[in-house]
Image 1 (cartoon, one colour):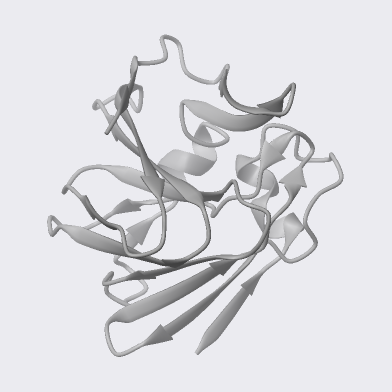
Image 2: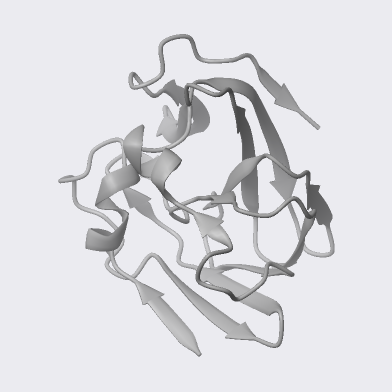
Length: 168
């Protein structure tokens, strides 16, 4: 099965929902307990193109493999009130594998000039993913944007106290 996500599908989690952006931000191919996500390059306003992002309704570890392109994977752990307590940033390059610990939400962001292609092992069950915490806060604690030709982090004002950013 192939899911195609549109700009309208991402409006709930974009820094500037009505800004011009990528018409078809990403595609997900689901098959046999594996998913291949293909993210288009480009920006939604000044924000780099990304996946919607989600948390899991199960306690397993998810593994991402970067197959092609240049990207960033963000991971966030929230407290009981939905406030971000940890925010991790991992670079994605071809051949790199990243483990997402149980309890962390995540999103993949394409910061390259071409497509970003990642493979993951998340279950293809409708109740496996929880999008609501991301939707309620209009995204994760930080947006990845371009400022003066560089990648920058913009605080999401929906969070009271954004956590420190940790990198690999």
